[in-house]
Length: 468
Image (cartoon, rainbow, N blue to C red; front, top):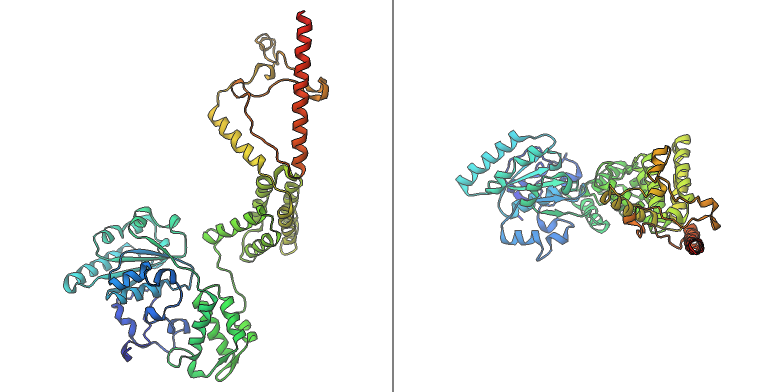
């Protein structure tokens, strides 16, 4: 690679740079952060995303054919969305223009598309318009891309950390397929760290700093798949030990200080983690339930939101298999409200373990779903006369309450009569399981059914005797 193409790191953070992609070859600013200096210069240097860049995969095919199409990159911070977009533009000899949805608007889009149209007419060169954080554009702003994507004025590469299904308008999704970028593996991050440690031009090689394997493994594991974070910690560690120093795990830990989990209480991570907690409880895994509960609490989730979700779990997944589950979760909510953090978190942990280890039954949940559906379908089904309220003589004369049998006066406390509308007399919504306390409920229902049948038989015999 020629000297003028080596070590270049132009603005990759959506500040509106309009240089051609080949400008990525200018020499890196030595004062730039290590993460900026170590950005890959070629596709071959790019770490991760093999599922998109390996031979025969989607993005590799575009590079080999030197033909790009509009697309959306969805992935966590530091996985290479911006760098990959720039490298794709360079590999296909396109001009790269970067904007950020945080600081740009429709006027800037019009300006860029006008320049792209003029450039294509004068040189035939295509323009890759990279829009960072495209999910921050509103619907109208996203719609502004559509005509320019459709007529090929620009190749749009949008980048988002949020689920495009919720954050990107459907017309744009239909024209720009979504490619999911994964967090970098610890192995990939270690390779990036070792390269940065020894690179004399862009990295820390000139400082003659060394690092133990344990320190690099710790940094890689602590970066949550984010190369920027990993390189930032390495650079801070080097600053702590100084020129010629050795980075150990303690120095790395000191540089890291406190690692905040990648978490947005209204975003994709929120829903993934609460789903993991719920499914761990349902799957009777107390260790996983505690882990996901701790993850969400440490990320700043509202503890009372978690208490509310566990109340739901108690009703949905445990139900009458253990009626105490609902009482325990409500008590945990009250205990947290009374104690506050961190002491109150123990009550939430107790509830999570109780739910995970309780017998499971979703029969009440399913019964409610069936009953609700039937109620919607039969909103006018009349109440049987014998169980209607009859507070007036007129209502009694109309037959309200006629024939009603008082259950407490019947043998076994169960009268041989129905309580559903006539059209639904054979409907069954609740089928008790044999789990935990619900097994006792199932046995009780069977016993009552037998008593009701016997009472009906006896009542029929009594009626026959009266007739005779």
